[in-house]
Amino acid sequence: MRMLKRLWLLIGKLWALTVIFAGGGLLAITLIPLFGLCLGRKPEHAQNLIRASFRFYLGMLHHCRWVSVDISHAEKFAGCEGKMLIANHPSLLDVVILMAYIPRAQCIVKHELWNHPLLGILMRRAGFIRNDLDPEDFIEACRASLHQGRCLIIFPEGTRTPPGQNPHFQRGFANVATLTNASIQCVAITCTPPFLYKGEPWWHVSSPNPIFRVSFGKCLDAQDYSLYGRRSIDARKLVESLELYYADLVGHSDARARA
Amino acid sequence: MTRAEILAKLTETLEELFEIPASKITENAKLFEELGLDSIDAVDLVIKIQAITGKRVAPQDFKTVRTVGDVLDCIEKLLAHNETAST
Image 1 (cartoon, helix red, strand yellow):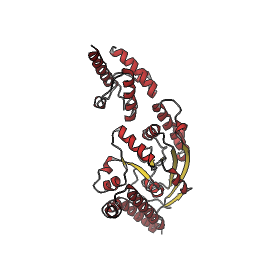
Image 2 (image 1 turned 135 degrees about the vertical axis):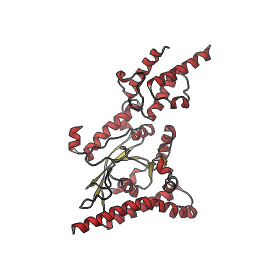
Image 3 (image 1 turned 180 degrees about the horizontal axis):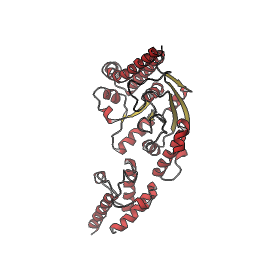
Image 4 (image 1 turned 135 degrees about the horizontal axis):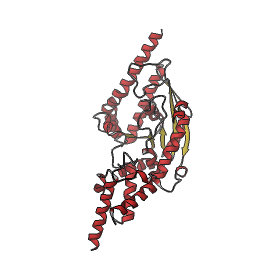
């Protein structure tokens, strides 16, 4: 029985990975052009399509008892329009979960993804921001999308943090915040047992199935972090204080003791 | 201004803007790897240099800057340009 359960979880994991990579490409050559023809090329259509697909995807993982997602106060995502939303990044599914629930999500994508022959179509059509713009253009793009009321999702770690380590933040999100005076909504994500984490072997499955928990933390306004009279110092202090805050939210006591 | 004077002024600026200890600021110190600057900090630094020298820094001149010494070269070039312009 245990063998069967593990086999089922392994099938689920491989299916989840296949769908996430092939599904995006499939959307890019089917529904995205269809929407473009029927409804015009508005970024909102592509965003809604991505959101609905991610909802469907999570629903599928849930109904097959592969992965559960537990969000406390999901209605708060609607209040994130025009704000920056930061989250820790334990798993590949984090961005899927956030984008499935945030009404007008704005993402910053790696230039490799932007230039991808299939997924790039999706990124460009949804009006996402590429990460290799000149610094001034990049900040302007972030500012413009915050003004349009989109919710700018940033994982300050830049990449997934392996289980058992405290999140280490890059300064990029703090630069964007201090230059645009954005409000910052903190979100904490935990996953037990760890799933699709950095360096996880593809055949590795853990039983019971993973449960993602998403919770809302504090929300900072510009006056909460504009404290030192110099933007460059404000950004550095913001990184330090939020790193400590996340160590408390999602951190590991052993890692805290070492730090 | 001599190169040493420019370095002193730049050290003061880097301390003020980015809280980098003066002891770490040498001609060979790498701005991004060793002093922890990022591309947005570089924009802040250019704005500050422009304010101090009263000269516009061409973006392409600053793109190749990697070390504190490179910044000094850039400022010396700006000031030299200033002198030729005023004579």
